[in-house]
Amino acid sequence: MCAKPPTGPATDPVRGPDDPHTRAGCDSRRPWCPADVRIAVRRVVDRWCREEGSPCDEDALSDALLVASELTTNAILHGGGVTEVDVDLEGRAVRVSVCDRSERLPVFTPSAGLREHRRTGGRGWPIVCLLSRDVRVTDLPAGGKRITAVVPVR
Image (cartoon, rainbow, N blue to C red; front, side):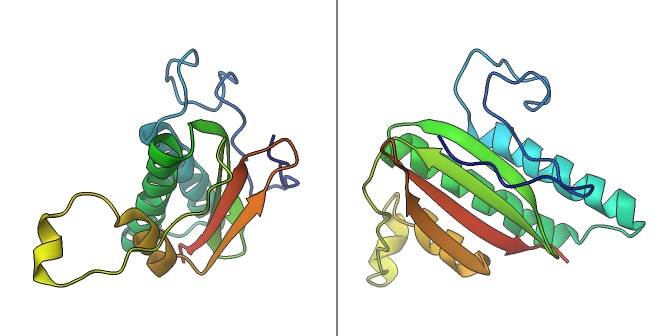
């Protein structure tokens, strides 16, 4: 299991898929999906903006939502499924951590020119790396890995 970071007044870490309070009305009997994680990111950032009394940067929030989607989708497609998700704030950024069952590292696939535009797949990891201030991959003691991306939102 992923270790959860400590919580504070401006954080709202997301728990496992069985926690009915964290899935924003999603069916908690099914596994995590990208939409669930996007909802969690939006909820954490919206709450932070309300507490700060300032509007959210929608472009920056869009980047964080895209990173959350890509991490979740990659865990589903290449990691044997999502085992846990954590979303919280780190300074002026949102930290999204997605755990999966695979120990295989993500692969950066460079583009080979115009013909690559028709190829499907292979763009998620470069997007995560481009939009994130920090990306870390950590092996988990019980197997699998945790990928954490920190995306500036202000």
